[in-house]
Amino acid sequence: MAKLFFKYGTVFSAKSLNLIATAHNYETQGKKVLLLIPGIDTRSGGYISTRAGFKKEAESITPETNIMDIFHNHLKHHEKIDCVLVDEVQMLKPEHIDQLREITLLFKTPVICYGLRMSYTLELFEASKRLLELADKLEEVKTVCWYCNSKATHNLKLVDGKPEYKGNPIDIGGLEKYIPVCYGHYAHPPTTFKNEAK
Ligand SMILES: [Zn+2]
Image (cartoon, rainbow, N blue to C red):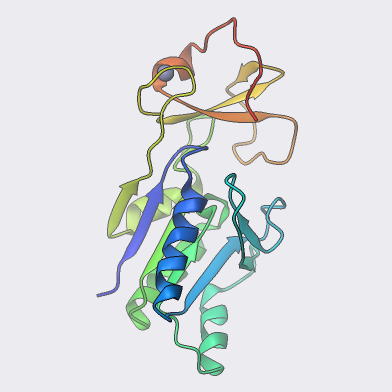
């Protein structure tokens, strides 16, 4: 059976870089990957881009998209898809995760999803929750805390250098910044901290 993977990590854990490396590995063997990105992630605009400067075209998924339709469309053009790679998966709807699960069953195509597990408000994203329920394999993409060398497990939201713990869990494109932290530094970030997150 083809597997559904959830590779989760905090911000700055190079998830998109990991995705692009996986796509590259398939493509160097002449295999075809289907790259998907949520359309509501306005930063992306049909591209998966990494902080390291790599960029790759991807098909957008809006809340109304049925991912099975995208998949069928490729099959109609006689394109065999060897692997589906999804970036920023936390921004999808839970129904999209069910559709991805269906793809692994019906077409025996593996699906690898990359994204955040939970928001800065300590809530699981709906799509991430669905992945925790449905995935065959969970894998943590690791990085270290911004303030110490412990493993980062949480995302801290900073507005003008001050931590913020409440609000809309999906909140992108504003002036706020997110950094990866351990739980200790999530709860008590250093007060002398100047906002140097990029
Ligand atoms: Zn720390």
